[in-house]
Picture 1 (spheres, rainbow, N blue to C red):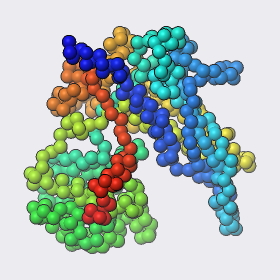
Picture 2: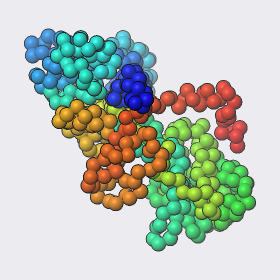
Picture 3: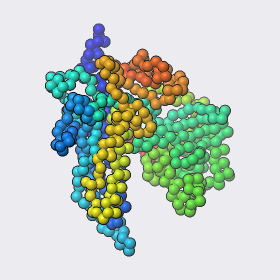
Picture 4: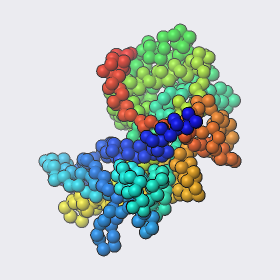
Length: 510
């Protein structure tokens, strides 16, 4: 009975779907603004130059526009009965910037900032129980008066009158080096890989150690592999001794690098940084002028190699240090100095809750809105109309993309079944669905280790609630007293560590 008292006390402060509600609240308070701040200003190709920059975003309370044009507040019960969407309007500060271009004679137009307007950009589906929901903070009696069940867990959406639950997605941890040994053409390959993630863009970067001693790197933006030493030189390793220093000065590890350094010098004739950039340039822009090739090589290294480290030129040396660490891990795995990382260990997993999934969807939808705004502004210029922000913002673009994904469950990145029709068979069925986790692994393959109960799931994942058949072990549920923390901003933690003296710059640590 003592355990019963503990559980009761726990649920006086926490609800069964609090993880989704907290995640959605974080999305509304921080993530929407973050996505808008990440977006580059729109540059319309208009004579005289015309740019659009974004300011603060404001989220209203759920409303509905009637057929006669009147606008009134809408409550969940009305949205269910009338087959409407329970959504809130989004308003964004938009500032036009005129000028900044050149006319035919080469005269520059002066830059002039226009008046900031707050434009209606679309509607955002509202999670029941969140900070922007009318039901938030209401007592049981007030909820009954509003036509709601006072014991309803909330934490779901209402889209076109249907109740939709967003199911948490399980994923491998981004921005962490994981080591593994795989078989390629019958030979073992030792890999250190990282899912480098920045602003929704996910790039798999891997360092491979082959049995013949070769060390290669693969990353998006370049077809095939590139020798590690060439890449390190392109990122700022000045000479061969710098390569040893960056990777490891342990004699056992250093011995594995000698063949790679000799190959770079003798076979590829790469000695200086410019030689290395030229080698990459020939791979990514063959047949182009040398200047363009070097510039293209640098752009690819900035944007596609380990983007989570930054996308500016000053981040290249930090990427060099990071790649050295990845190479060291791959060599140590080959030498038996470290073991493979366990992909099924729960410390190597992260959960994407409703807020994170909505952030991905909003980022995609907002980018589509930006493209449409650019097109509308250029169209206005062709018709010799003065550019109008209000006319260029078509709110349906954002609204419909979000609503379509919520209604069908087809999410950004090709994921399906992310949002599902809420199971109202019983109260337990509803709560179970809202606490469900789905793994992205293929259902048709065995994946025995992934389906197994892992010791690190103790206290986090229910050991018995999983379906039979192909989904067994891939669809799981959160344990009753499991709490999920929301991610803190990386910059805050790094600043805190710098103040404490734990973190130095890449150059200092090198």
